[in-house]
Image 1 (cartoon, rainbow, N blue to C red):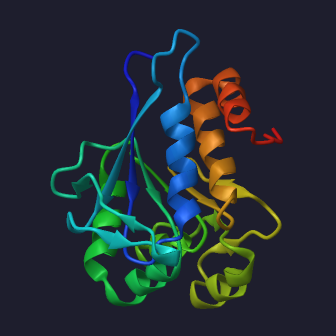
Image 2 (cartoon, helix red, strand yellow; image 1 turned 90 degrees about the horizontal axis):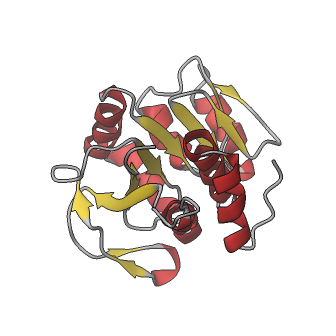
Image 3 (cartoon, rainbow, N blue to C red; image 1 turned 60 degrees about the horizontal axis):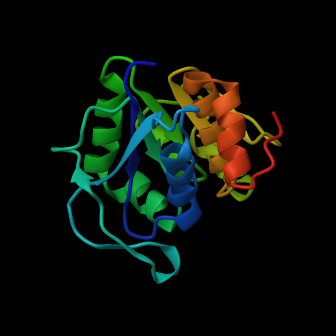
Length: 198
């Protein structure tokens, strides 16, 4: 690995905190044995302004889509705000779609972030999952998706989806193993005191 992979994480009002903070922690901790970071992480939003995450946590994105560094992966979290984007914010949906059109960029959703990917057309003809409370809605509203139940995440190559909230940590560790190797994924999980089941 010659340089760190660039991970951008989407933020928006009413984003689920662990959906973005869990993957942020995974990618920011992952390092080679000599301490060299495997990933650079940047939070990104439609506008650079303070946002109110679920529960009232205030967060300020580091970048907008206009000035964010080119991403190896874009993480799309869930929460009530993801449903607002899916239904009422075609600009962000289009930005997610545009990120996918960049060569080799991986798009990975956590929880109900899958609905943003679905609305962008990125899950058509693919297998996907989301929070267990929303599986039926994903299946009924987006029939072109093969909805998977009782899984932590689904890896379709350049598109990944995970179950709810803490499942995003599992998926992020999977991406670490894919790009930096299983040993680094295991050491990252150990630092987080997270039981990595693979």
